[in-house]
Image 1 (cartoon, one colour):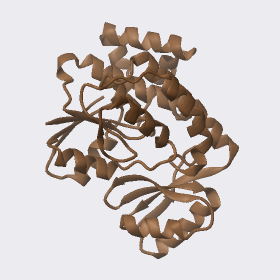
Image 2: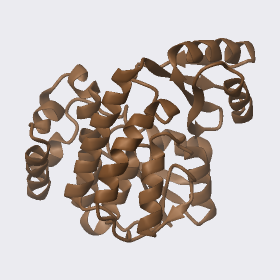
Image 3: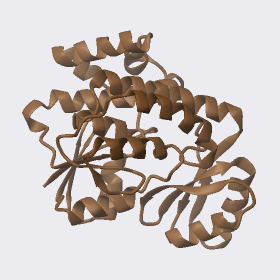
Image 4: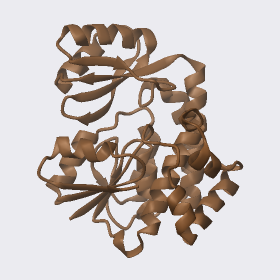
Length: 292
């Protein structure tokens, strides 16, 4: 069975999607439509901008969404998923590619999400850190004992967790994690503490936009970040999307569940190869490829 997976923030690169725009009339129409919806020429920033341009949350998130969703559309009959999933932002790409969201609604939600997250980041200084080579349980235990907000945000693969929270709490946690034997506990260059309680203002704002948006039954199960389980019911999908901003991304569990349910081939659609690497570390026996 074939699973298509969609990357999240951090996978962007200058020039992403340019070949699609230049060589596929349908893709060009979708990119042009996106420029209209967003109210600025995101294509200029994607194709000819700078790394700094692309690192702005309000640009990064719609850019990755567009690249991923338009790739899926450009595949035509080749895009026949038995199941889909996306990492954080990538969940919106997965839902759109699988028909649960229209292209226009998906893009509007991603733009609203990016703006809400940007505002939440500016309200209170916060950050994230990558932790390598410690069991999940040990990382959770140390985070739970720290004063202030610090939680496990991304369960990326065995031995790789990202923690998220207030800067002082992250610093204290990193110190203890290294003392406990972590190979690395390194702060990331991100705008704020994604997938943590620090994103509550963004979650509340995005919830209103999600509630107003029509979600359809997807063409295949969508494995969602908050519980790593397959969903096809629009009401469940909607509730999980609202919860996603302050809940962890359970990527390790998601991939394991997809394999347990029959997935033996994973195809990453979108910029970069991050998910291909993670899937290979989680389940070594499955076939992994990608298109960008």
